[in-house]
Amino acid sequence: MPLNSKNIVNAYDREVKVGKFFADNMVHHHNKEQLPKVAYFCMEFGLNSELPIYAGGLGILAGDHLKSAKDIEVPLVGIGILWKNDYTTQLIGEDGRPYDIYPEHEFPTVKDTGKSVQVRVRGMDVTCKIMMVDAYGNVPLYLLNTNFERSEHGWMTSKLYGGVDQDRIAQEIILGVGGVRALRTLGIDIDVYHFNEGHAVFAGLELIREKMNAGLGFHDAWQKTRREIVFTTHTPVEAGNEVHGHELLQHMEAYNGLTYEQMYEIGGDPFNMTVAALRISRIANGVSKLHGRTARKMWKHVDNSAEIISITNGVHPPTWQSSEIRSAWEKGEDLWKPHIDLKKKLLDYVKDKTGVNMDLERLTISFARRAAPYKRSELIFRDTNALDGLLKEGKIQLIFSGKAHPNDTLGKDIIQLLVKMDKKYEDMIVFLENYNMEIAKLMVQGSDVWLNNPVRPLEASGTSGMKAAMNGVLNISVIDGWVAEGPHHGIDGWLLDEVFHNEVDYNAQDEHDLKALYKVIYDETVPVYFDNKNRWIKMMKASIDMSHHNFSSDRMVKQYYDLLYTEH
Ligand SMILES: *Cc1c(COP(=O)(O)O)cnc(C)c1O
Image: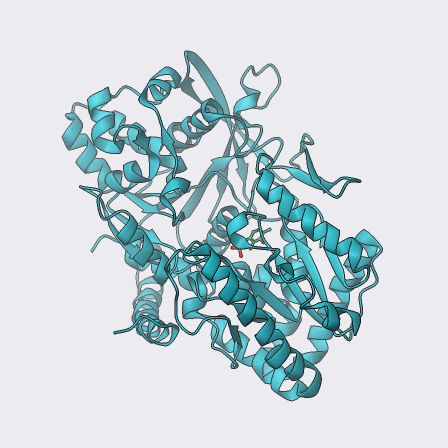
């Protein structure tokens, strides 16, 4: 059967229906005590803008996972790190180039449990205080912290994804080994340890060590540990997966009591965190149907790997969907009025932050992502004159936002280019600095169109388009990640592909996508917006119909319980 968006969607619908039925039954008909108790490990958590301990999609996903686990009342705790300096506060300089500052954040909503654990890092005993966010009731989040008075190890939990390999390994020892020890110290029983990305792999080494201390041999301890771990992989390119040399691991004491031979058996040489996670877990998943496929192909050569299934990401509706839009949609009322209110709120924010006067009447196209080259934030400007007419006639306006990794020169070049366009087209184009959850929320609720044009197949899922779709903000997108299961061309968005392209010929993709993008904007989006408002509003409704259940993190967490956490 040819792989195109239509038959992926059909296959997906069947699985969702079966999965949902089972999950609903499971969650409602069993005692809560019978559900596996889960510890969810992640380097970053995006819960709200006031708790800046996230960099991007991975953290927002983790935050939404916790929130839905709370809402559907399942037993889950989060394990993470309290990052004193966050990822980066990224501002735009006079020269239009982004620069990074690292304020010392205070965390008024985070409590000290009064308990702590110790881990070994590079010859040192490192004390980590166990902090806690208890705003989510049955789903507490525990955060390890080495930044306190008289601590000599504050650097270990200062910058998320900052520093060099040594810093990263220290952070991963704290998350993994420290995380398991925190659960023991707090007296929390856990059935399933969920590693969201490979950063938490050292937790597996700690679980093995515990069993070896109790008298088991290495292989028995490994096999037994394996039944307790599940793993979610996110990176669709091999080079993006983290590897470490054994000498460095040994030097940092990441072996946690194991030998070279044992570590080699788990993660190879050099030690690959994803391969290790696949060998240390019972089952693994990719984060969309397509990504599951890509991941299975990519890791086919790994012997002794867990099976990789697909569970598509979702987003937390109460966080991302406007309650006014939700309510109008539920009651079958006019969606346009609440939409215009949200659009006005976004444009007021733009005016307030930048002084730029945007116009409520113009079609507003937004793009907000991490400024990684594969996301191609600046694709729309590759042909510099193509949009000139529409911009000068006052038909469209563009809003951009996004951070680059502090060391990513190419990412910063992209932002600089966007800022240049912002200057060139005064009131028609704007770039909002220091992208965060607050800006994301305003943009996914208040834009007319959400643009998504990554290089295929590099977007494992993508979630901002789901947030937009739930607000009736129409996606213009290539087919990759979640989009293969989501928007339908001309019904609830516009697709730039007819079929999924997975050949990685970057130049061909650039050329194809650019042509398709201008064609869709000129021939479809602009005419519908200005000449057929009724159809536009119908498309908004169809977009919410398509997304409100399938791309909700409630559906996602149920599937994690059904397909990953519960052993079949
Ligand atoms: C949703 C979100 C992301 C992830 O968006 P993608 O489309 O997956 O790239 C990143 N950062 C913030 C602040 C978000 O809200």
